[in-house]
Length: 354
Length: 179
Image (tube, rainbow over all chains, first blue to last red; front, side, top):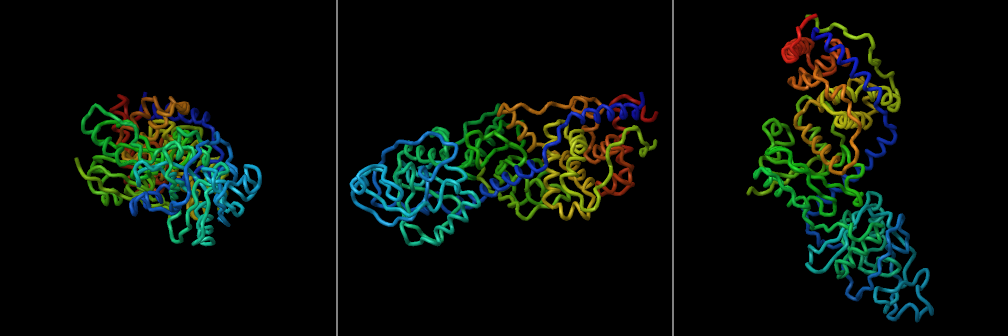
């Protein structure tokens, strides 16, 4: 058989096999792409916040007079009601139980007990609801032993929140969770709205319950921002070290994101980390081409370091944040794929060597 | 040797989009064929579909320009050919595929006619440009001029790559280079 006959047979067979390919709905593909790009941009935003400041750069500052907790969390809810989570302007605070005001509890449309039930807040109608929240995580990094809930806002949520902050700067706001005021901070203007820590001296369980109510996820599926990803191993000591370095720093990239490590493939090859913002119930669900909001490379071969983006990162282990795809689009010679403006460029973070 | 020789009767759709064609129509018409090219070069349908979808989405984001002024079919194939034949990108995609497997989500059904076929495996073992030229030449039945324009290289270079690629393939497969 000649090469051309061989090629002809292979081509025929290959083309026939393509009949088995289902063509996805373009509209669905585009919509999914938009969601992913938004999540990725958001995650990259989180990166900037964390590098620039500490997690404790508090937007909603703990109000001194808010009190202890009654930690009954609502069950997972498909859609979170305004009763379960809302941000409202505070019109007044009555230093006695709401039941004394109305004769019954729950108190009604605009009266909400605090977590002890000893104080009663008069609140404006909900300004913001759980719709603004893309995901939630818990953390005690800023103040060990004291837990906060980190709310990662969606893009639209961020705009809504900024509007709320502008409209109510200097006033007191109440965070209502499950019909109770969990914290009533003063609203400060000029704060970053990408990641909102809600502090109120929570225990871990309380923080998880609050995050659970807001997101509708079970409390044990709420991610701890400081959790190191589960320990990856590799028989090759160099690869194992690369994995450790990468995973140790994964939380720095996006603490609230689901971060997990792939197994190393072979020594010296790319170690990929997945940091997906959103869908924390199943980090794998829908995992596809645009889910690498962060990836960690170690010991890239020369061919990979000659590209524009990679060179800037220098040698050694580093994390490319923002967008693996942006890095990919930029790293190869001769590729004319446009790098869309709205894709955030990769950010290189140099880690110290061993 | 005649690199431009057409080998098969059934032709894939090479018609370029009409001016201002909708992305949907373009996508539906070209998808399977582009996945085929990506799979031939990348070696797995999972990766092939991923690379193809990524290229289509990139085209969609700039559709106003690509759909009107460029040849979108050629544009998408160039992106696919470059992505699918890039070792660096492939590693990242391997990572993604691996993560998908870890999720125990059923991988898409393989295309053994491409993934396990000795001929296409030999094509993938060729240097990047040779593999691209050979895949476009055989699978897509493209002329050297088309391949040159699609990959942004000269026609002479395409001829050299095709020649070298065919010599290497013949040696690898133990076939005579000419019929």
